[in-house]
Image (cartoon, rainbow, N blue to C red; front, side, top):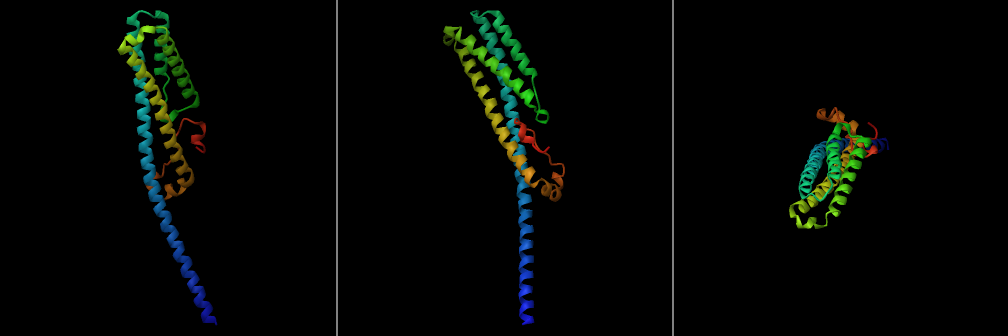
Amino acid sequence: MKLNSIFKISIIVILISFFSCEKKNERKVNVDSLSSRLVVLQDSIDKSWKEMIKADEDKINDIKIWISKIDKIKKQTPKSLDTLNELATKLSQVKYSQADISVKAVDKNDSISTEIMNRIIKIKESIPDLKKHIEEDAMFEKIKKTDNDVVTDRIKYQGFVLEYNSIVKQFGKDLKEKNEKLKDLKYKRGFQADSTEGI
């Protein structure tokens, strides 16, 4: 009877140790795959940021080119073009980086950008024969497209940041302990106030 109980206890201990080792190995695999996923996400974050900044710079340059082309048509009062040019310059000065994204800076950028687009549309509508000026009309369409590209790239960036931060929040401690390269692991800043929760 005692031998039977000792045998049962031994089997239970062996099974517990086996499953305990299995869980540790499974956890290690998760840490390794999560580390790899963070590297991919970091690359995606950087790429979408660069694409967004490039689209924003292209939009500002295209606006300035469009203003100079419209000015040559001479159907628009110089004051409205001057105001538009000032806004484009102001937009190029309202910059932020990945490290210092703030809701205030993003809102200011968006406000100026929206005002610019509304003024461009108003100017375009005040020149009924603008469609005859193919180059200027095409430039207007390009400005609209790059404005949409900025929004699309921002959405992609935010999605990658949220996924990255979710992994850091759930597994950050394990990742820092198990992977020396991740000892300085931190949340990424995003466009929404809650994307860096817990920093």
